[in-house]
Image 1 (cartoon, rainbow, N blue to C red):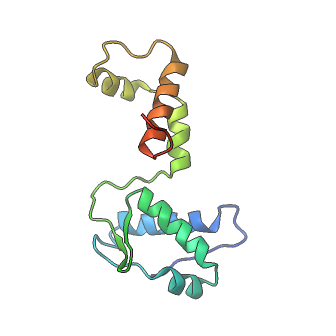
Image 2: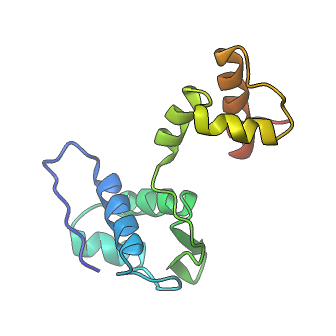
Length: 138
């Protein structure tokens, strides 16, 4: 797997890796089920810390680009829809509250009106996100 790391770039190295692997999957260079290099082997080949690779792989897994199976390795996910945004980008989008496209989804979920107070809608979405990621109990 050919990855290019620019240590002078302002984008963190782990994000450079996640962006490149995500692009390889989207472009069909990596296919569902393909095995990725082991963290240690990839770190050694790129001359970077193993923790950087681990962080990149964890972000890829949270975005459903790859699946990590302990003892077997990391594989390109068999899921067809790949999220190109990381958790930070998703959180920023949630903070903005629902947009015009989201209002249809809100109405379909049982609400008859979009949230009147933009901040209440953003707070509710943030609470739902925290619950989904295990940071908030119901």
